[in-house]
Image (tube, rainbow, N blue to C red):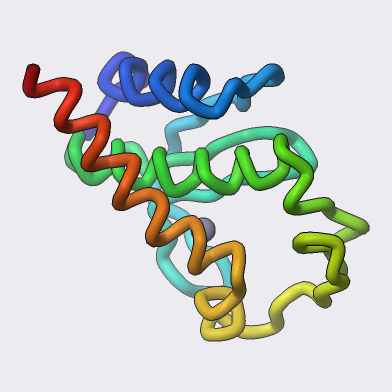
Length: 130
Ligand SMILES: [Zn+2]
């Protein structure tokens, strides 16, 4: 179980690193499902809210937070633009909203978030250890 304070250093690290002008709201919640699949985190580009499962252990929650911050950054830097609930632009290319979990996981924005969050997490840990 985590509280917001546990995530604050990682949260501020992301704001600084990505120069995010309009910081997202952080919401801790019970575990939740998207399309029937358990999710530990989500970023909503319409409301600018990052949601994290508060039942996670701290280090896992930080990793999930980084993943969601990559999504936040994708919007902030204009790589990702939402058209509506059904379509979006990714690097100026039109994408229909994925229809299955597999399509989501294979989308270019999820792939980027997955590998970049690992990099971010390692950089952050190195800084903490100093
Ligand atoms: Zn993601």
